[in-house]
Length: 94
Image 1 (cartoon, rainbow, N blue to C red):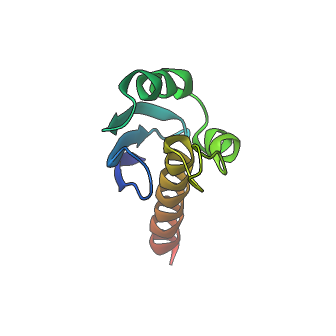
Image 2: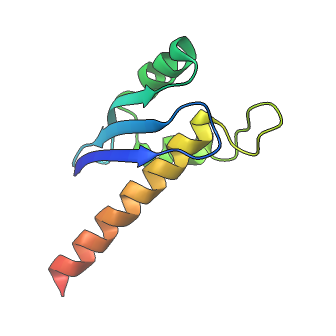
């Protein structure tokens, strides 16, 4: 599939970078900014796992009074990447 970069909103982390392979699995998740140890742990926990399942699990997670979190932003990033892939695939079949 591809390499993705996502600019986060409403959290300490400023950006997330990751890959999704041909089978739809996440790899090399990196957060830039934010709680370094916790965000490295998220990257390790999701490594090689199904991207859509991970996004569904993490969506809606909040951080303190914020309506989002770095994990929730990863879910947004993954859903955005998967939507782009669907659009690419649809464009190739037309």
